[in-house]
Each structure stands twice: as structure tokens, then as C-alpha cells.
Length: 375
Image 1 (tube, rainbow, N blue to C red):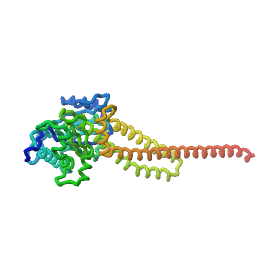
Image 2: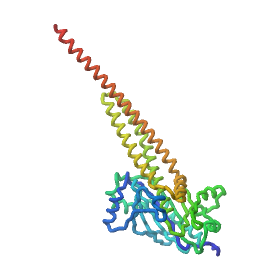
Image 3: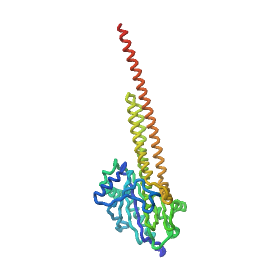
Image 4: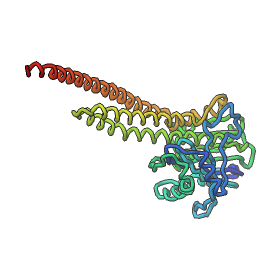
């Protein structure tokens, strides 16, 4: 160990996993159900940011779970567990492994060990068990609960203090953030290093945030959790947008088949089939639009430029705008199909009415001619 290597005096490794569990969550009911078990909960808010500058659209519900023990490099380590419920149907589970007295390289190794221990399909059962501790008792608060295969992981290295006071500039001169942000042991190319270090932010001289697709480093001597909260919201937005993107991917071929089937029908009630299919598509568009608007408004930014920059950078890194645009395009296709079906159904009804009028005229003519024929 180098004598000049920095030591993390206080910090943590935080592993997030997010799940889509329902169409929506009744947070008020969930809070009451959790309180009925005499367990702690609270509505989340940004701790260091004024509400008029940035705030949750609908404050999520934070729950405290029992801690668990992880085996990290053969050493049992106690990890705190919390959950956060979002009204648009997402649940985030956070495992927090406290760190104190580790050198910088030891801190990086600890973060990578947490990633190896909690990542991959072999650990799915552990996360599912934690999720059920939340979902089971709160099942009545889940609106149209559903099991989705879509999940999102994120890993954060959080440092509150080193063994000496450091500015953000001095910190970046003393440590190499690349191994932490990449998880790689081998030396990366200059271009790869530049890409990893592109998204770095500081507000004060002694804080630093560095973001990548699946990891982040936060140096925050004041202990504010706002950056962590913003990153979690961005991950939750990606999770939900991916869910609706895949939902619409599955829905479009089904819609094409139903439209083709309705158009092949030749019976007199075909207009009803068009109307029924149009109503179904309209309901789907309305529901997805409502939920995506809730997701888009999960965090409302007005004045806090620093957090807004971090939030925007996280959304771009996670490709949330791209996925959201894909959802909008698919919704537009379904809206156009709904309009076409509605117009076609109206045209079929008009044709049926014309046919009925013609038949009535024929019947009247026949009825008028029959007496004359008899004479």
C-alpha cells in the first residue's frame, strides 16, 4: 500500500435494483398498510434543495427493511436495506454497505465485490426475496399488479470524507476514478477513459459527482442525499419507459392482426367489431399516455441548475429520451390506427344505413304494388 494513498474515513457502497410491479401504486394506502405493521415509513423529499427549486412530482414512499448480511471476499458484512415506492408502479430496493477505514484501492475493490456478489442471475432470488418483503404486505395498494421481467441495476460509490480534507480538483489528482466507474482491472485506452470521465460535476469546491451508464461516484462531505435521489428517479424513469416500450412492441403485431381480422369480416355487425377494437386501442393509448406523463413529471426542476445538469446528464446516459421517443412513435401509430378504425367503422355504419333505407324503399314499393296486382 502506498503511504500517500487516501483512506475513506466515511462512505458506503449502494446497490440499487428497481422493479416494475403494477400499473400504479396507491401510496397513501401503502403507507397505512406499512404503519399497521408498526414499521417505519416516510415520504421522500430532497434534503438540501428548496421545494421551489426542485421537487418530486409525487413524493415516493420510503420504507425501512431489516438489514441483511453479505459475504464479501469471505467476510460477513452487514448491509442496510431500504425500499422506495413510486406512484407510477415502480419499487426501488437499495442495499447500503457502510465503508470506513479503507484505502481508495480497497474502496474500489469493495464496490466491485458488492457488484459481483449482488449482480448476475444467481442473485435474482436474493433480490426477489427482498422485493416480496415489500410487495406482499402492500399487495392491496398495488393497482393492477403484474410481474414484469424488466429490472434495472445501478451501483454507487459514495464518500463523505477522506482521512484529509480535499477539494474536488485535488481528489481527481490523487485518485483514478476509472477503475471504480468501469469495474475493469486492465488499463483502458485514452478514448475509453475520456468517455467514462465525461460526465463530471461539482457545485462547491469540495464535492464531485461522476456518472456512467451503470455506476456513479459521489463525493459529498455534507452528507446530502439529493444527487442519489435524482439518480434513482432517472433509473426509475428508464425502467418504466422500457416497460411501456416493450408493452407497445407486443401490442402492435396484435393490433395489426385484429385490424386485418376485422376488415376481412363480411357480416352486418362488422362496424361493431371496428368500434370495439377502436375503443380498446383508445383505452390503451389513454392509459399509457397517463402513466408516461406521470413518469415524465416524477421530478420537477425549476431553479436548481446544478441538480438539473446532473439529472439531464443521467437521463441522456440512460437513453431515457430515446426510449420515450420510441414510446411516443408507437403511441402515434396506435392513435392513427384508432382514427382510421373509427372512420372506417363510421363509413360501414353509413353504408349499412343506406342499405336499410334502400330496403325500406323497396318494401314500400312492393307493398304499394301488391294491391294493384290483385285488382
